[in-house]
Image (cartoon, rainbow, N blue to C red; front, side, top):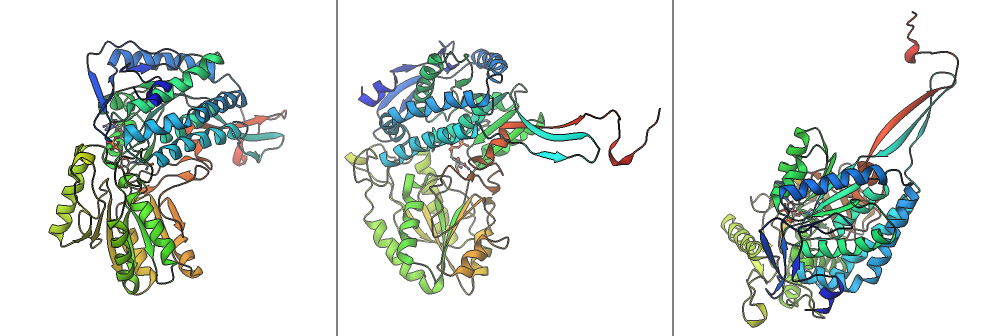
Length: 510
Ligand code: NAD
C-alpha cells in the first residue's frame, strides 16, 4: 500500500459511516470499489450506508447538537484550530490522496488542503465575531438587538472535483456557529472524506467532544436525497451540477427547509484590445486546463475582440500543443485525467455537438491511448472556435473545452455575450483601461457572483464569499459574512420601562 494511504488510515476496506468518534460497522452488502482515475488501480473498498445507519447518524447528531451548542463559540473555535493544525501535519499525505483519488495535479491537491487550513484559521477568528446589530427602539426605555443562534444539523452534499475543500468551507463555519454536520461526499471520492474524518476523530477524542458533531455518511444520490428530504436537517448545503441542485432545491423547499446551492458555471473571460495579452493568456490557460477543466470556475468561454482574436488564438494553439499531460502526481505534469470514462464520453460528445453546430476545433479534443494513458481517462484539452448561442456552448461541459468567441465594437457587446448564458458563477476581464474594467464590475457589467479584473476565473481565495447567480443557485460560502447562512437570526426587544407602549403609537386600552 502506498505510504500516504497508510498515513491517512485508508485500508483495503472502509466502513459506511462515522459519527466522529466511532466508525460504523455496516449492515449493507453493497461494497463499492474505489479506483484511481490516474492508473485505474483499486485504492480501497467502501460500503454505502443503509437507511438504518443513516438514521443512527442523524440521531447521534441530534444528541450532539444539544451539547455542542452549549459550548461557547470561541471554545468551538479552539477545536477547529486544532483540526487546522492536524491538517497542516498531514498536508502532504492528504494532498497526494486528493490528487490520486480525484486526478487533479499534486500541486492543486496541496492547494486544496491549504484551502482547508485557511478556512480553519478563518473560522477560528470568526468564532469571536458572530456579530449581530443593536437598534434604537422607537419606544422609550426599550432596547432592541439581534443575535444569531445555530440551526442544528447541517447536511453537506459535496461534488467530486473539490472532494474536501468545499466540505471544510461548510463544516468549519457551521461548527463554530454551533451546528453539527452530516457530510455526504461524492460517491466518486469517498476516500478523501474518510481520511478527513480520521483526522477529525483524533482531535475530537483528545478534547472529549461529544460523538456526532462531525458525521460522515457514504453513498450515492439516494442517501443525498434522504438528507435533502429529512425534516431533522434544517439546512442543506449542496454543491454539484445544476441538475442535482434543481432536485435538491425542490426537495428542501417542499419541506420549507433552507438550502445553500453551489451549482454549475459557464465562466467566461473577456479580453479587450487594451489587455496585457501575455498575462491574459497565462490566466486563460490555467483557467481552462487546470484540474483538467473540472473546476466549477474553469474558464469555458473566451470572448475576444476581433482585433486581437487571431493573435490570442494562435498563441493558445501553440501552448495547447505542448501541454504536459499525464500522471498528476509526477513533477512537471499540468493536466491529469478526467474523473471517469463517463466524463470522457461527455467531453467527446460535446465536441461532436459543437462541430454539428458549425464550430471548428483548433487544438486538442483527442482521447489519449497507449501505456501511459491506458485508463482511457486522459484527453487533450480542446480549443474550439464557436458562437455563444450554440446549444452546447450554453451548457456546462465538465471538461477541458475552451470556446473562442469573437466580439466586435465596444465592450457592451462583449458583456452582452458574456451574460447571455443561464449560469452566473465566475467571470473576468483583461484590460488595462480603467473605464472598461469598472464597467465590467458595475451593475451594467458581469452578472456573476464572482467578477475579476486581470485575474482569471478560477482560483478563489477563502476570504471572499463564494458562489454564483442564476442557475448557479445563489448560495454563498466561505468568507465574508457567508456564516450567516448557518445560523438563525433572532430579533429581541426588551422593555425596561413601567409602561407597555405599542409600536407605531397604537393605543389598545383594556
Ligand atoms: P453531481 O451533481 O453529479 O453530484 C454532486 C453531489 O450531489 C454528489 O455527492 C451526488 O451524490 C449528489 N447528488 C446527486 N443527485 C442528487 C439528488 N437528487 N439528491 C441528493 N444528492 C444528489 O456533481 P459532480 O459531478 O460531483 O460535480 C461537478 C458539478 O459540481 C459541476 O456542475 C460543477 O460546476 C459543480 N460544482 C459547483 C461548485 C460551486 O461552488 N458552485 C463547486 C464544485 C463543483
